[in-house]
Image 1 (cartoon, rainbow, N blue to C red):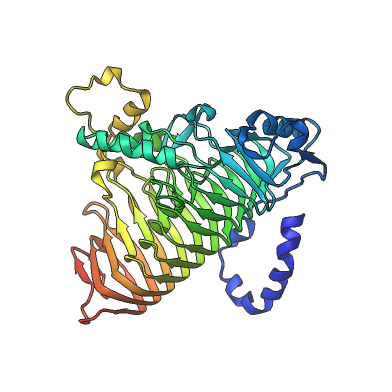
Image 2: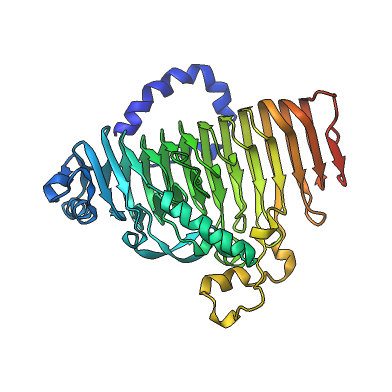
Length: 472
């Protein structure tokens, strides 16, 4: 297989140098990503189905016809002549590789009508939502590859969101704005196995860029995300791994306007109902640029997030480096994480942990003048209380952070758990942070520090409050 044959020489070269390190990896890391990908060599050129590469002709029907024909004939590779192809939602099938080669651009329609609504999950809530630009739904053995560009052309969707937000904020409806402002994701992999996403450059997502949902054995290799072209798109996450398992992410470069590499597992009552974790994920050799967090856990934590290894990551100008966030209605357990060999430059907060994140968004209440019997079903899901309340309290525990260097940071650490759920057993080893201020730890238990240096202009120490066995 092309993907594995390309990386095998590098693996063999690295074995002598990193053999000791590999021996320390959890056993499960050897089993993440695509298990086997078998795509026939047959080519299906979209031009043969009527596609026109002029950047103006709508090609949805032609490209989908090529995909469907490819699948009906046993699979193969759907390819494009050089040029720009305007399209609405496409639906990839098993045994099909959508190959967007160098010199090819897929341009997303800027008309929401070209993205039919489907049942899916968005921001932790199952609901009807527009299809993504490229969708892989309930399939196996499929791929999106090539050194071309998939451009969501998202600015009209960004503008529509901000117009709605301005109205909703005044009405005290911040908590529902992101759900009412329906915007297409760029690539959705939902309920799939053995899917490869390789080498593509994604631009200007209308909403999240790559969303892996309810899926397993997915490899994301060598992708680039550039969502801050011609503006700063709200909620344009880079890669979201959502209630999925056995995932490999590597050699990717994200510039977006929200979380860069993010792990999620459902929101509040609806997420607790589904109760499906994100687990067994290896992310390595990646970089984040503009965005809210190099690596983020939450805020959708209801199903739990566990067994994650993140290593050799680099943030340049990202707002937070290592980020945890949840809320007292989310619930879920975030645990057994190993974060190592991380470099942070010009970030605002090196380590950012909050269990009570963004109340205006996280907590729903229906303002006066609204009839609860006349609101959409997804409003009711978010409004539905978590009972008993204790079920909504999130837990963060057993996190190893080691070999971290952070330079030109505004605040070294901001960590705030909850009185009823302290941040438990965080360990720090070989961490060196140079920051304008040291920061605060509140509501934590049994943290350990080995070779940790936090340098500030006035040599001030991290303030530790309402915590037990946390001595820095």
